Length: 497
Image (cartoon, rainbow, N blue to C red; front, side):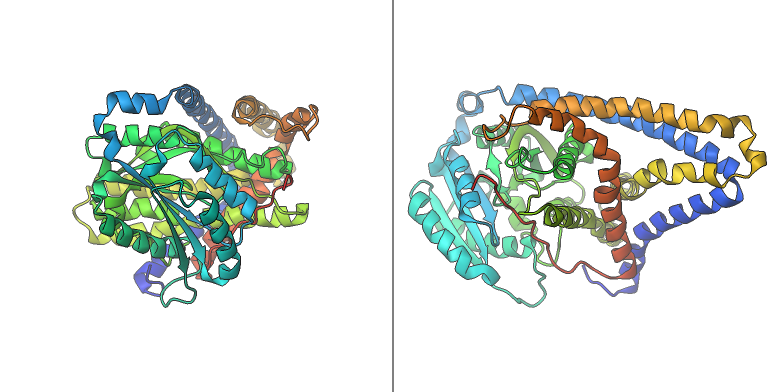
């Protein structure tokens, strides 16, 4: 993105301006016309209750699809239904920074446990130059233990301070993809027969993931025009994490489950897969971008003039929750992680600029994509604040005349009942979360399940502190031109290592 241009700066200001305008209007009406504000808050809470019901329907639908998918022996189905499967290779990118060896090795052990033949795997372990000494020591040990297990193991080191780049996972992947392209060209493998999977270094794949991915890929009419999004779980450290980290991780999983049920809304998120041909066509991941996971979908969407989509995979990959050696550091890291995710608001000016200059994309598609981007970021930042804080402001500021009205006297009860009904949704999510948990480690007592139940009472607090506030922070930064500038790597720790 070319920052500093007047057109782009105007687009960058819009999301944050909408958020702050909403807060200003809500406060102003609460002061000047508290009765109007009371009606507005009740209507908004009623609307949000419908959103909760809507959310639950899609969560339950995707959860059922997920439960069915993990029971399927995908490799057997692949061999019986797709005769051409043997020509499909998996190119797996594992970018890393300063993570410990135990985390890297667990990821490689999961790859080795995959049902898909490992002689069809090209694995790229992509390190950063700023951590080169640490990376090389790990890469050497990984090559020693697993170098002969795959068709190829490619180890790359991304240099620092390359002009035009920012410190980010995307810049590392951009460099690694160029190296991988050179290898694939030398091996003379058709790009259409290479499926790319991009994982964080702590990603543990389901044993049937690559078989399910290959089956889905070969089932598409044009597999190179789609990305493939699995269910993202955070089970690696779920039992060891404090409650706020567990709630944030589970919330991300449930949000993704709703999106998987509506593929027309899907963006790629975190771990995902795509055709190598599409990756080459768009010039790899952008190297000046924080959220490369969702941006790569938009790069393809724009390159193919809207004829690109995301296909859901109801099979999981698992990663670490935010977990540092101390609770305060964990909370700070959680806030930074959520702010980094919320920095996806940078896609809004990118889309506005692109849509203005690309007449090949249908107008309806442009409007829909901009609506999804705007509505998602806007409600992320505003809805929790309006419901849990500003919703009670007009009741506090109303004068005696307003307080004597029927609606003012009944408003607290109406809002309370709407909240109670919304809490049913929270109860359902809490129940479903138990079916997504990994087995309890022996080092945890059985009563830990009680904490897993009780943690949901913290949701109103965590959704403000570690969801709404980071989103407001990100959108405000973009609005005033104070860009994040670099990718904040989430610290990873394991209590069993």
